[in-house]
Image (cartoon, rainbow, N blue to C red; front, side, top):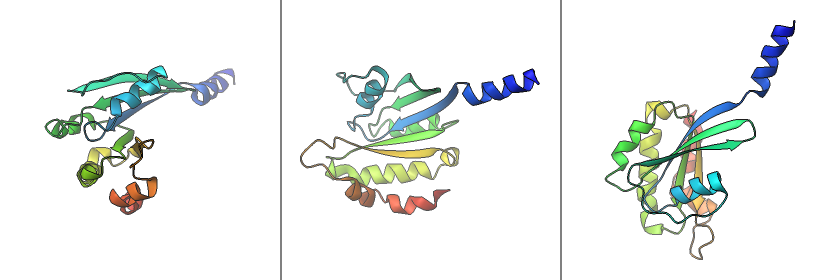
Length: 152
C-alpha cells in the first residue's frame, strides 16, 4: 500500500520536463523573450548565429527552451531541432508588415513536418508596444492561423 501511494504521489508531484523550440524570422525578438523568461529582465542581444538554450523553471515544470537563429541562411537548419519537440513557439515581429508573408510561409512549412505533428503551437506576437504593430486578429489572418485549427 505504501509503495503504490508513493508512486502515485511522485507521479502527481514529480517535476515534468518539456522541450520547447522557439523560432521565427530574424529580429523577431526570440532571444530577448528567452532571457526575459529565464532572468526576468530585458537583456541586450546580438543576432543569434546557431542557438541559445536555457532551462526555465515554472511550478513543477522544467522547460528546456531552444532559441534558434532566424536568418534566412540558418532556417534550413531548424529541422535539426524538431526531434522530441513538445512545444513550438513561433515568434512574429508584429511591426514587420513587409515580412509577415515570409513568416507565414516559414510557419506553414514547419508545421507540415512529421516530427512536429504532436507539438503544441504558440504564436507569440511580439513588439505589440510599437505604434504600427499588427493586432492579434490581423496577425491571425495574415499568418493563416484559422486554417491550422484542424491540425490535430
